[in-house]
Length: 128
Image 1 (cartoon, helix red, strand yellow):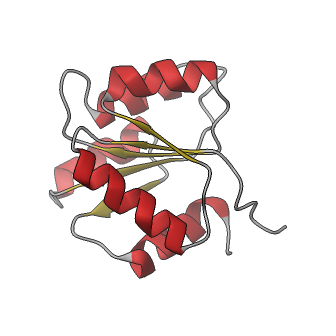
Image 2: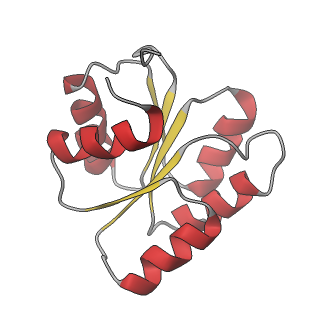
């Protein structure tokens, strides 16, 4: 089945520059239906008001982090199956283990490029 490049994607990061970078990389890959959220609380409010096909979230944010957002999404029956990718500057094994236990689909370590993003997306949503 072909990936729908019009699928709604939510990019969550407390830094505007990082949101713009991720949006730009997604656009390079052909995805244009991208919304943004500034933290986990903002993101969860958006998730409850619109049906997203994918969430890409930074890990380190205040007041609600990406891992907390992931846990909130996974414990909610209505949203628990949304594909979720965490983005972080830290590649510590304990973080990767924690993310996997919380139900993350994929994990991206900064800095990354369009090729890395495409590889990670392909494992989550299929080849495109």
